[in-house]
Image (tube, rainbow, N blue to C red; front, side, top):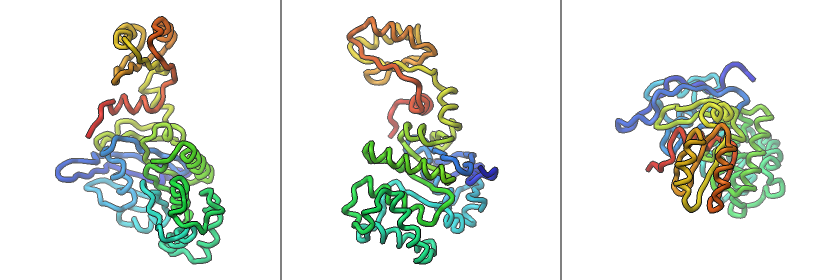
Length: 305
């Protein structure tokens, strides 16, 4: 990996109507890594991506994308970047191939250069036999893969993705994950936002968690889990679970009640499991701690509107 970061953000701030939506954040994205931005809706994730692409100007702070200052040289930086929006915006009047052709012209690529890349892009999207199909004839998963392939038409060095698998079924989601892993193996740098903690844990080398415009955690998924959560989690629900949960507080490092479930976090799960097994009316699940546990601990379990 190159020592120079692909994206460098320092002291970034932005306010709207007196409300600070990005509050002095600093981070960098290294070449060849997948970097994730996590946070509740309104935490500042999308605003940060738009800053990085030079689509909006910060109130304060410095941004460099691919070594270029943003927003001053944002247009040149974007020529070397790819973007996958949250919602597919393919042209419904065009075929899959025509969508790639038109998008390639935005980067001033020659017709010959675009035509040379189209077979590879269709293969990457798993659409090798569907190039002449109109967009309406493609499934949701196919459209999403085509949108990802379209972002590669200019052979970008870095790819920005806003919730790349939202709305997909498990099979389509796993296929997208495999394509993103392939891009990493090819040396591409990926920057994504996601609400799927499993996605972030599977794909990201590092990630940051934003809350109300501030960074509250930064590191690899494994580092964050080890730092913030006990290694074992026992989830318990059923009649009388709250009474059992009070007893479990003596056995666990931490017990949280969320709705009709007790979440017990412990260094040693055996006393908890032995205790709940004595209560056949209770249903339990013992599992290792994961990134979702970290996210819920740091941002809270209550809904925010």
